[in-house]
Length: 162
Ligand code: MG
Image 1: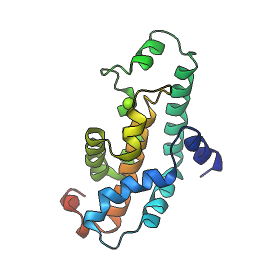
Image 2: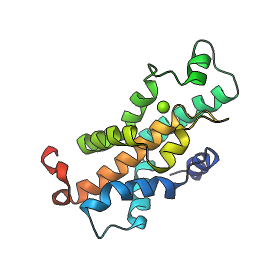
Image 3: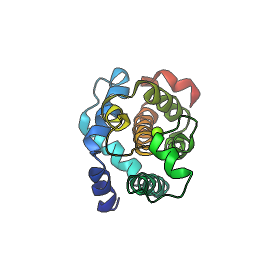
Image 4: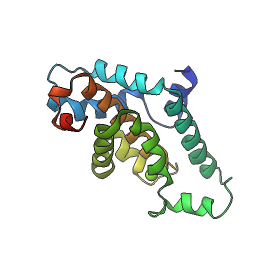
């Protein structure tokens, strides 16, 4: 992974460790031997995929341009309001999640609903706009979690779907 993506995530308030903590929460019930370091490694493996990098670059650029008020209308207003019918952010996140199939999709839906840890922080209204990043981080955590489950399918409830 280019170092710049990790520092870009940092600039947007997201550390690899914070994403790994969500992966750990998702997978630890199925795998007692799992460590946070395993989860960090899995997040980095997902970030090494070029299609994942492209999704993150695109979504983060749109968030930053919206913060700077530089998007054309009506997109600028939609992003400022985080309109609930605007589903492009979720659709783009699926581009990350789909890398590991059905388990990733199931976990993404769960994270979108429960919004644990860093996802909740990103979702809070503040001076920053994270219309895309909250979903992309959910997609990233879901894919990293599914990657661990794929390595040990017997340890996972969704094993039948693989
Ligand atoms: Mg969103």
